[in-house]
Length: 142
Image (cartoon, rainbow, N blue to C red):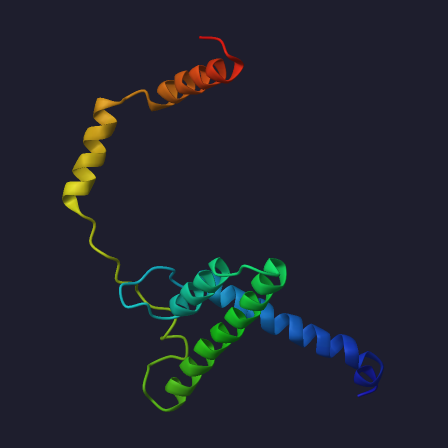
């Protein structure tokens, strides 16, 4: 008990930092794409949308959106624990750690991309040639 008397501030600060590192780790390893927008995905989408809408005081606006997103993520974790305690899901993390359902890729689009690469095998060389021509135009050398 004497240890807590002398180091209470460091202990509380350590708990605070450990909590946010845990939240960060949970969000970091959760699926980022899902057809049903489950887990932390709605929080992240809302944060991105609101960050793009920031016009004035951009630094403050972005920081406040990050803080709001963190509280939204904590809410998702809390909802998982509550649903688990009520018996609505098997594990506390089932609402944010799941096997994502990804959108089906369009076969026609994949075929078009493959055809483009077959018709243009030297994309890097073509880009280098275009950059060289661009520099010549900027310098006024025809």
